[in-house]
Length: 86
Image (cartoon, rainbow, N blue to C red; front, side):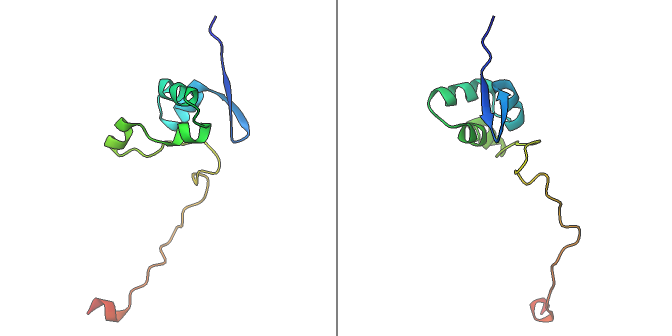
């Protein structure tokens, strides 16, 4: 039976597969990074070469404190002066 490792991330415990799903970084890459001494935050947020090529920076959905839970500004606060239009 395979051993299941739990990693603590932002106050909760997750399996490597759960962390991979949250971050978009493949589980094998996460395991390798952690084995090399990376901390959880680095392992999850540094994009892989393939992700950088596609323009993916991070996929940290469903994690508090990533800005996802903050409300977006509903109206823009952009103003233009008449001088700029001339």
